[in-house]
Length: 342
Ligand SMILES: NC(=O)c1ccc[n+]([C@@H]2O[C@H](COP(=O)([O-])OP(=O)(O)OC[C@H]3O[C@@H](n4cnc5c(N)ncnc54)[C@H](O)[C@@H]3O)[C@@H](O)[C@H]2O)c1
Image (cartoon, rainbow, N blue to C red; front, side, top):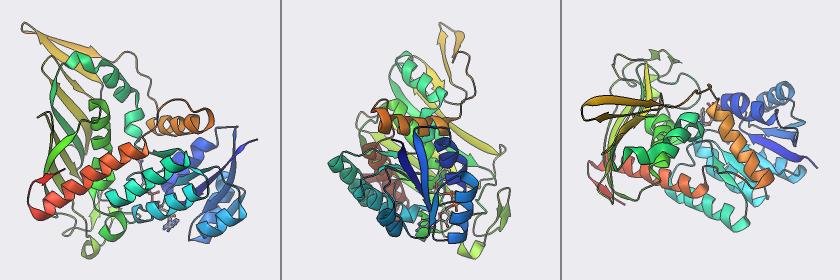
């Protein structure tokens, strides 16, 4: 029997990532889609081959037997929809960030664990070939004592959706894009225990301008940070620096990368390279013969494989909670202008 899939939140990521992956799996039936905008839900169902459309998730679960749900709503609605899906016995793939607060992320992880259901987050960069290569070859770097994670856009304030609204998103570039590089850095490092966190955030461009490379926004309604710079110290004394922005007057249009600095060698994620010196001769190890792989579909595949065959790894509820705690601590530190101990 085919597993019945539903999507809650019929926006762009639902269409380009979730529906388009589910369509490739013959073990799945595209059962229903839900969006408060019923016209949008109907259009999405028609265009992506879903059997039914709803404007209310509770009604959807009352009428449909659903095995798998993707949560693709704005951040504020992740928690209620993940809980609803789990309580209706469905495995869940939730878009990042997990939720708005660590308390919510903790409840979500607990609910999934107590019901024996898969809860996965779409932290897709860790499913890239590059991240897998670095994870596998990490020992070559020796003791990695400094890590730099960057998710920087030069003129990339999102001009669509609700990404500049703190009430609905929980924050700006940190919770939206910085979180991706934070996750992949922590994944490669093996989720070391965090000791303390410091951060400074800025609102210098989003409230002043109304137009950028990603469209226009209302500067009067720009309530998130437009850049945040953070510093995380682990219990082992090593550090992770994080730089993230929607808009920063830098030369490059976009820098999404993680650099790892060890006492034997260093490495970067994009491209995946490891470099060191041999008594003064510089050496470089490049990841062998990469084929451009879509890390989004690798992340979706990992989730579906876990649900159908209980094999492989996903970005789990527990790991999502660790990342959510870090995001909250970085925001708290920036707000209080103080070091936050975890
Ligand atoms: N993993 C990634 O790289 C990635 C990329 C893009 C977006 N995202 C995440 O996906 C989520 C959605 O982003 P998007 O770009 O698709 O946004 P979007 O604005 O295109 O779509 C959001 C959809 O959710 C619907 N919606 C709003 N409130 C809802 C509710 N209470 N219940 C159900 N549906 C509701 C909206 O009507 C809209 O159709 C966000 O959490 C975002 O952070 C992740």
